[in-house]
Structures are given as structure tokens and as C-alpha cells.
Length: 209
Image: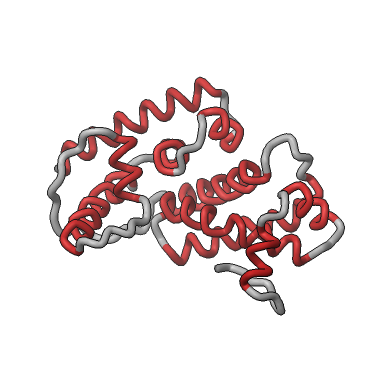
């Protein structure tokens, strides 16, 4: 976790996390640091995970997640509730990550040792390969990780904009309208960009597998 509340038990923290976002946001606007920490605890894992899928470097992802919540605290007065807090946070995180990736012009990747799987359905495969798993079978887990390496390497070859929309839709499961709001794009642009991203990814995977 990025932050934890001082002087509160885990049960108290979990109870406070259940408070409505709008209540906590109003407290944040009044300078309530504990309310800000509760919102960070509520969303930090999802924010970190989506950043990690985009930049593929744990140190960079941790730093970008921290930056996201710094921006959140600094700009909470500008949040008017026109969108959900979740969408607003994702917009900050994705924009920071896109800028980071474009500055670096490439992603830090681990090497591939082998390949071995058939690409059938982009959405189902990405969801399964890139999500955390509690798979108990070591052999199956090893195979999933191996294939996940291949998918992650292939994803890294997409440009940052295509990568972002694919991660938000096919991994995070966000609705098209939420993605459009997060990336500040027209709905049609989101759909066409996602279609191109999926097609490009399939081409890359076909050449690898």
C-alpha cells in the first residue's frame, strides 16, 4: 500500500473505506487528511495495476501512482463531480503514464525465453493472462506466466495511445463511455482506436507464436 492510516485498526480502516466517495471528497476539500488517505487506500491498487500494465516497470508504476495521488490531493478543489472519482483518478493516472511512456519512447521489458500458446480471443486471453491469479496448479501457473510474458512483450510493441485504450477496455473492463471520458476522446475514436489496437496486437502475436 502507498499509504496507511496511523492509529487506526484494520477493521476501522475497512469500515471507513466504505464511506461514500462524495462524503470523503467533501472532507478532503476541507483539508481532512484522513479522508484523503481513505480514498487513496480504496483506489491505489487499481490505479497501480493499470499503470503497471501500461508501463511494465514496477518502480515506474509505483512512482506514477504516487504522482497520481499527489495530483489528486493538489487538485481536489477542481473536482466538481461531473464524473465519478474513479474515472477522474484514472484520467490523471492514464495521462501521467502516457506522457511518461512517450517521453521514454519505449517500455522497460523483460526478455522472452520461449513461446507456446494459441491466440484465439483478444479480450478473454488478455483478461486471463494479465490479471493476477490464484491458480493452485504449479504447472498451469507456470504456463500462464510464460504466455503472459509473450502477451506483455507483444503489448509493448503497440504505441502508447493504442496500449492505453486496450488496457482500459480489455483488462480493466471499462465501458466505452468511461474510456472516452477518461482519455477525453470521442466515443467513435475510442472504438476505432481499440479496433486498430486489437488488430495490431493479433498481428504481433501471430508473428511471435
